[in-house]
Amino acid sequence: MNTNVRPETMERITTKELADAFIEEQVRLVREQVGDKKVLLALSGGVDSSVVAALLIKAIGKQLISVHVNHGLMRKGESEQVIEMFQNGLNANLIYVDATDHFLGLLKDVADPETKRKIIGKEFITVFADEARKLEDITFLAQGTIYPDILESIKAAEGKKAVKSHHNVGGLPEDLQFELVEPLKLLFKDEVRVVGEALGLPHSMVYRQPFPGPGLGVRCLGAITRDRLEALREADAILREEFDKTGLSEKVWQYFIAIPDIKSVGVKDESRYEGWPAIIRAVNTKDAMTATIEEIPYEILHHITYRITHEVEGINRVLLDLTPKPTGTIEWE
Ligand code: XMP
Image 1 (cartoon, protein in one colour):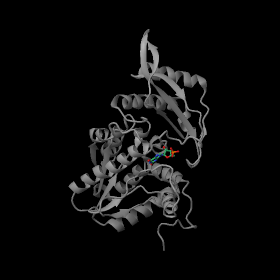
Image 2: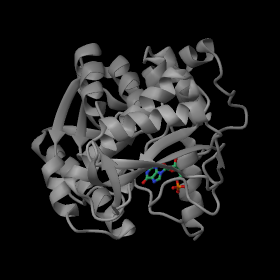
Image 3: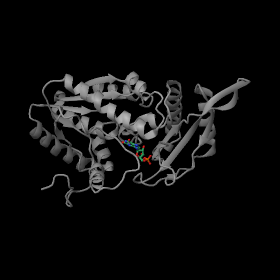
């Protein structure tokens, strides 16, 4: 039997009861597979890796070693949240690696989007592998692979070309070959969320919007500089805060700020002020293959514009991206 194919008889997990039954079954299977051996996990804080972490902590406790690599391109407060939730909340065996300087050093003066993505993806694996080598007796690698990833790899194997090189952990170096533990690999995203909530993860975490592996790196357009990256992080935090306050975060599939590498002339405090424009992008989609634009009420847009231009150092304008996908992709890079 091919364990990478979802059986037609498998019921869609839509309720807490079904999720509990799934969790119970997976806890049993994971314990059976792993025994008393150790399992390693790259915990990004995204929905999939967080649900895997919570599930494995339930199954094998401290035998799970989670590594959270902060590449410096996370959203505001995100790494802190991962530490708070898993280390303090779930008593996880968590290793935190702050690789900000390393990543930003490598990305300095690199403006080409695909080169940036490749550097971030490759370095992520290198940093994670370096941590893995420091640990002893690891037999397994857990991954937050979900069913769409499996379907995607099948397409890739059939030679269909990807528009962008999306990255997730995979392809570890030769000397680090682990057996895989992939408890979510037959689930669709909506099911992963139901399972996450049944495991006790907060709603806001489990229903958070998607965030790309290369993080803010593909939203700080062109060559990344620390000051523009910081402006982006702050502006994005304001956008998210206002979307939460107004209930838009429950309605809009993905919303974020991108900042291009251009400055325009503006005025602040009665003086000339050259700054970057913050671009708001808010889209709805089912599968991220196509996307439509969410109509945000002007009143909310005015308030967000006021806050970003007055609270964020370096920004003097706010623009709204009205482009559906196609012709735009969801991210700008
Ligand atoms: P695009 O820009 O291709 O994005 O229309 C479609 C969806 O994928 C997300 N995205 C990524 N997700 N790793 C990921 O896990 C990546 O490298 C990556 N790049 C884009 C994007 O945020 C959108 O939801």
